[in-house]
Length: 124
Image (tube, rainbow, N blue to C red; front, side, top):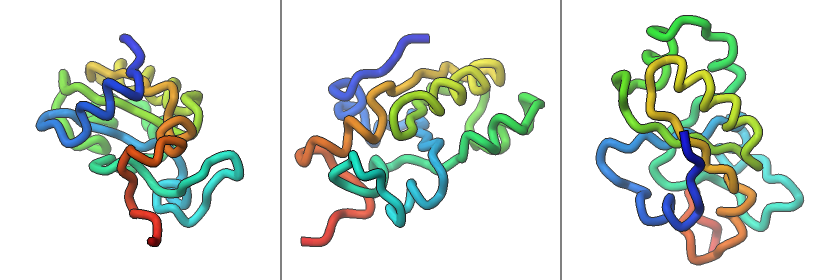
């Protein structure tokens, strides 16, 4: 399991077969809540929301795969706000049979670069 850099992820957003999981809370994912240290709210385009708390309380691999919605062996990149929650998620995902990787920069890093896309898009 290797970590994912911002440059790598930026080049792979929307790639077929790649599962991108945002493991923050729903309010963080939707953009309803934003950390004071982040210049933008929202999530990386194409990301699916799956709260890490739900992953951590789902002990069986089959149940984890049902939550993720991808077959064992699929490449899954997880991110959160700062890489900590996603590191926990990656462990659970790897145990469930995924090629799981952590985007350690997570939303904190992504949101700082205005050239990188975000959903929902900020108002103009």
